[in-house]
Amino acid sequence: MLTRPARRQLAVALLTCAGLCLPGRFAHAQDASPAADSVGRRRIQPLPALGSSPESGLQFGASVLAVWTQPARTAARPAWVQGSVLRSVKAQTRIVLEGERWSAGNARRVAGSVAWQKFPLPYFGVGDTAASSAEEIFTPTGLDASVTVQQRVRGAWYALGTVRHIDQSIVADTIGVLRDGAITGSRGGRISELAIGLTADTRDHLFMPTRGQWITLTYARSTSGLLSDFNYARVRMDARAYRAIAAGHVLATQLLLVGVPGEPPFDQLALVGGGDMLRGYTRGRYRDRWLAAGQLEYRTPIAKRIGGVAFAGVGVASPSVGALFSDRQLLPTYGVGARVLLDQRQGTSVRVDYGRGRDAASGLYIGFNQAF
Image 1: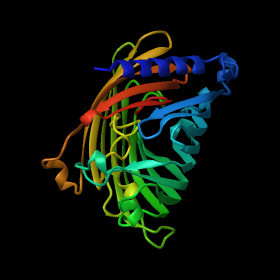
Image 2: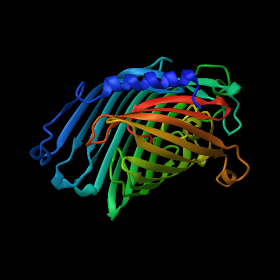
Image 3: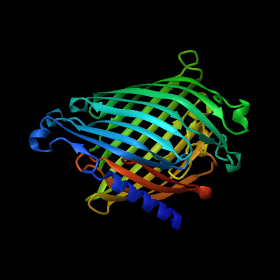
Image 4: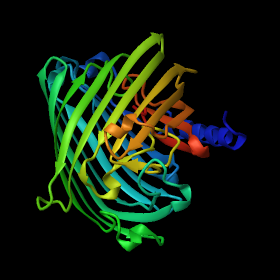
């Protein structure tokens, strides 16, 4: 049950986003006539950016989302680019440029992102019993960039390869194990991950899927001495399914498994929390070598451009894959949210979610498009 302050926060955030983001006020689009569809359609949405999460508080800045609907003859999904500059009330700065493009018939996808940040974050320790009283604050400053190429192998199956590079320094802002240098990666460093994987994608829509599945399995490796200061691997399995249960009503599910064996820096362990999975916990409130989590979300229309969601999930963090299925502390979440539709055809939207977890954990999240 939402408290009165939480309901007020959610209402204010939704009204703010609705006022800022409804199409026609800040958006520009090409001619949407059938003739224009034969050559594609572009929508550029420069928006005042308003975001929120437990680790950052409110964030303010500017964002530009550009979406290109490909010509009908290409049968390709939309291409998009988003650039954002954000500053939070906790003196955090983040500058991001990201996007992706699909080839004709969706045979190939190329995606990339580059981000610079100076972003103070909390560290509570490793394991699912980390106490809130153990909180330390650290500030990573630097660059995080990645490029992914995805190529169809057969039908809905794709092979993919990803290169990711991180170059950052970390400063411990409070007294604790990070300042003592007792934790791997407590001073920052360079990371270069090379990943390969397989993806199956049968979603009917890129931004607002109502049916189909998206399943991906990847293996990444960081090798000390090869543009990296750390030696570890990363295994990730992410499975999502969407089912339309009535007109405009969608049931979405997600299962996630992340493993990070080896000697990873503390900020590259499997993390609990964030705006996408296990909403309600501060990102990194719990962290360990392995994480298993799942969530269920019900999406329903409310008004012409307004939709609502209700979600629930649970996760476990452990030092080994075998320990995931032992007597671990369950990390449940639940919450509600709203969606403000920006573009009916392209399916882009602004989302506002409020989630709660165990031990009175809670968080308000504002961002673009669906959580998953």
